Image 1: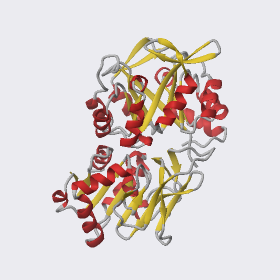
Image 2 (image 1 turned 90 degrees about the vertical axis):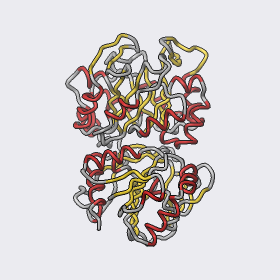
Image 3 (image 1 turned 90 degrees about the horizontal axis):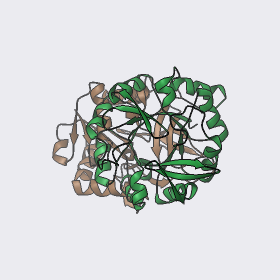
Image 4 (image 1 turned 30 degrees about the vertical axis):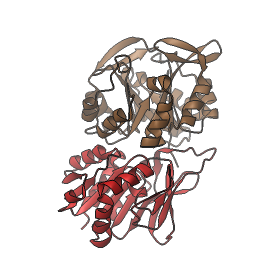
Length: 249
Length: 202
């Protein structure tokens, strides 16, 4: 039986790991290689590493960083940050990535998802979507602004139709807050999507991760803050899932 | 010496790193000439069957691999798309020809309400702890990421399965030919064990 995944998400600004709050306030956390090694020895299910400054700086994530961090990484690695061309994807895959996350460029040129999926297979392309809640509505969130002419759910379905193999949803309103995730949002998303959903934003404890899986049936939970800043480990989360009879590794 | 076949369909570096970590000699091979002197082949891949099929043909590796594997009977391990490419044909994108080592076709996993496609994540494989699964604990989880699966015509071949809405071929073995739908190089210690066992085959 397919297991539910607990996925540490590592954000970098080019060369250092950092953690944001609401996609804004930053805290520097040192070398990505060290952080990755720790997760590798913890035998985690998977890793996501995103260069959150790459698009804005008009570059793609540094492939030598990926090469280095993947040197002793024997688990799946999803990499994103400023990916704009199939050539970028090829370079990052060669450097050791398994899946590629596309975010900004999918917004600027949605057809790129389709082109990438045709060239590398849907299973290689993760559409990463940032969103925020305003009142009772959910919108895309880009460059620290709400995009009020695009409905989140329509956008997610469009990514799926264009050939994305997985969806990574980042709830910007909850990002870095460790205040508990928006399970209703996750449920709404899972209910309409046919492809696997990785949901990230606001997980406050291993029990909260288990709530998210149990109540919203997400395929994977993306987590940063509680791994960086508390005693909780990915294994604590897996154990919490197992304790409720949810298949986990 | 193991030849790691690279036809630009990604993922080669991941397998290379795993072999390096295990202290297994390998060379990355992109053309038929480089296969000379290699006694085993690993063919990893992620991506589209149609694109890979074309690249196998244009690189000249298709013919060279057929000779080495079918005539000279050298051990061959296909991983993920590399396993799918040992089939006769695949329907990903347009219908295209594989290496044709075994009588099988590659078809999309049917959509199912509770079993999503792509099949992504860790899933258990019912294996018998022998051959290249020696020292791998029973029912170990391996990492899968694929939307297509192998449909075997010849039901007598040795297979191990995983469950995802239906029984999906996770591993296939036929004489000197081995294939894993999952990624051993991404399946932590259990996967590394499998690569080590393959490298020690005679």
